[in-house]
Image 1: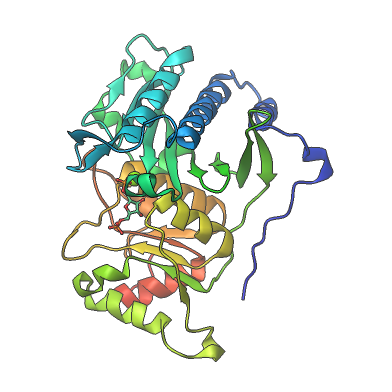
Image 2 (image 1 turned 90 degrees about the horizontal axis):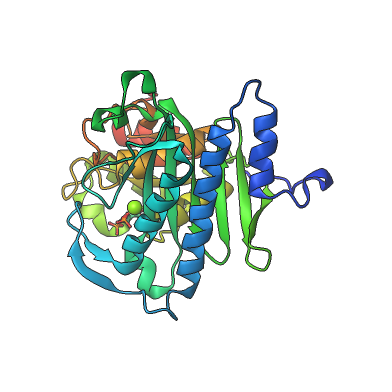
Length: 344
Ligand code: AHM
Ligand code: MG
């Protein structure tokens, strides 16, 4: 069975903050203007501000609901709103971000005064239902380039496949806060040091094992699954040690937490379409695409079951999609048993 395959940073990387890492990456690109670096730094600042609020949530009276309902029909938690506002305010500064679309808002937010050529998509606080009970939550983000020769971006500017992203990542507010980032070339993890007020490189070149032994799915939905998904889940519970079965089951109910574990330990996370959510539950732009980008860059895979997530062309900002991601062999097995396909 595969074991986690990242190595600790080598001595030369000790003391590398996220900002240093991003800046040194920029120096390697001929003609880089610094705009992308500056935008990543703003996202890093948003992560710092949100983690500070999350860590103080119980003390600062910002747990609980606002009394409003968001565009997804879900009750809005106070921290959801705070994280959304912080992210947008941070991205508005410096002028590199032309527009941002988030899970919390019905429409994208445009910055007409910006000359920037990047679009950001984000789930500012994923796993909201876990906020009040001290379970890991997170922020998920993706970045696209935006062609300003056509003038200001529009909502349609966001309706592009995830394969066009130039960077994506997430922040997990867990037992420590870790920011995982990919600009397409490798995936790196940075751990928040509250005493220094910095993210330090802690997981260089993360690789998702080719196969794992954990499956992650909301088993309470089993009666709503298709026969294919049920057969796949039943297979993973068979007693066949020679085939590495049965798998263990783990399900936090925060995508960032379930995906983060899957990225490091391997195995599979699945939120398939079911009778209650015929198009899947998770959002293509804010959750599925950034995670798929990270998993592919780490040597893993992400699929709807029949199509590569990063190839799906969104028809609307808040489109939902079935999401299955993890180790390449586990994802391939899912596609075969649940959908009878080997694609992609
Ligand atoms: P959220 O973005 O409103 O927090 O909802 C998304 C969450 C994911 O983090 C998680 O994977 C999923 O919803 C859990 O759903 P369920 O409770 O149906 O298992
Ligand atoms: Mg979410």
